[in-house]
Length: 225
Image (cartoon, rainbow, N blue to C red; front, side):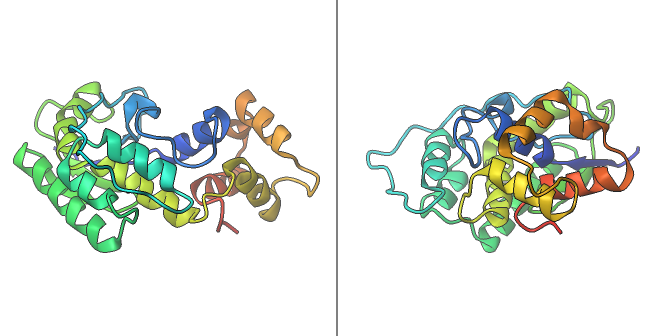
């Protein structure tokens, strides 16, 4: 059976984030695609269903810092205790990601997936049980119980976005600055022009090195060169 390479669609999430969100930064889990950040496959036509949130504790943690709103929202919507425990202090550490990734991997293995390997940015691969095709809704459905049990997709998305943009700077501005920095757009390029280009599908028409530059910015707008 062929091994399937899966990549969390951070590029898609970031594009919608800057075009669709009313505020910059990672959208809360109640507002993202499929109600959670997707684990995604190379085919984008399937979605993860929502996971039922745990009951809220009698006292909510007090979140501080540039990502406080996102931590509070995702804490409220968390479906797994390990997810809520990790979010509770407003920090997602490498050690915590290692632990939750291990649990997510073991869960998938228990469900019959093999060759399971994940990176903290959401990339990785696995071989699904017989009869489940790459990019199918059946694949997402089969993986969803493990996301609900660990919150891995949401946590890996937050971990990646916070690493890319620790100050939670305006996402549109970050993209504009990056596109200018890599030489894809002139110094006069504006946020309004970027949103217009994004909504028109202009970036998807780019080829070769230009498209590589755009993907680099979309993947890590604060650091791409």
